Length: 116
Image (cartoon, helix red, strand yellow):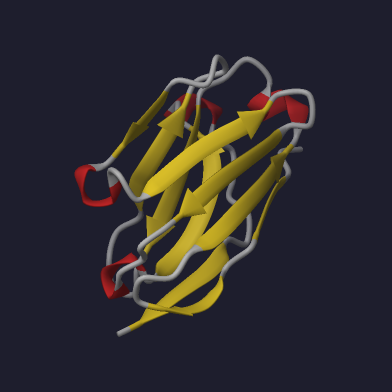
């Protein structure tokens, strides 16, 4: 059974920072590229950042230079450092595998709310 637990969200003012964490079961994390996703109210879930097992990252254009993804493979842990947050970053954030064939379910996510 896949287990994904996201934490670290909260309410911040624009320009503030948050640090999200994700712990994932080994079956989905070990040796696989992982992603951070978000879903804003009334919108489709979108991919925000990706990170390979070796630590190579990629970001959607809207968050480049503001978000930094990292992972600790020994702990099955992912981190998303979010700086200079904007109101449009408001969403529920999730972690999961990057490959659709590995996605068996979703965690509860963590709410990020950025006030203007």
